[in-house]
Length: 425
Image (cartoon, rainbow, N blue to C red; front, side, top):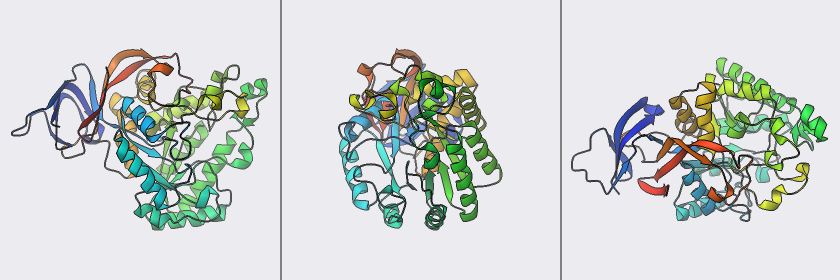
């Protein structure tokens, strides 16, 4: 399908473009900007006046639940939700069932993704067999199968020697190691930020040192091994300060923050609101401000959804016994747009953190609308107000603390590889 997108404000941070112009799509790729290529005839014309045209969003962390947890979500339902949220590429961790520690599981997921046809999906492979932290998986074969990085997900490797050997091996393969920095000996059975709120509610707390100690250890090992590393879902102000210092010293490290950590604090738990049960936990107001500052100054290069759909029962138990996570891929963009108004972050800078920057971390060709690039496009109305409700979620999971919030900014069209996969009715 040949597509002309006209009159929109085109923002492509990867190519430093921010202007009102037309975009032409031909043969599944961006064919031209401003002026149509010779002989071009549009099969579809989209009038994007008063809208933003940008690269399809790249979500560096989103769980699809399939295989293994189809009662929470499926590849079909969650990639449809991604398209609804303007996301054209997402990265899924290896903690599926079976775990992504063999090429066969990668092939299974990719086969189902192609069948769904709503979103590109890239995989992270398991660092250790079964994510158990003892024996390294066949990382070279996982790379050959298409895994864009390696991680042990939430399963923190407490043995520093094992982690050092793992880093050396990953570095030798020129892959990126994705790290969840939470020292499990300090997390224990905690479910909320250790502070006044957890004490008042009688919830076992998780101190910020659970994150900062893990970050400091891993930074030392990164310096020693030279591995390229990305820290996932940092939640404390002190942790992002440590990352900023490491970047200043030349270490090959990047970091992301989940969107809910930029809007919610432990105060939002209120009276045991299980929708606010996340891992790592919602932190203090000081931490939120520190994270926002790091997003603005560039120490945090990427904002992710950390999309985790759940069935209804997963959130019905007492707070500490509920499953952590938020169904958040459909609210990623409008919640991120709030940062432009509330922090002074530029719109172009924000879109970079949702497109070309995560693509750079993943080492994939995405997040750009340069001529010749794959035509993955998100079009949204930045002035459209809408109220988050379970009824307008495409995701199978309706678990969100943002239900009832009025948000500004709504996706109107999502184009994947030159094909229109979502259009607002």
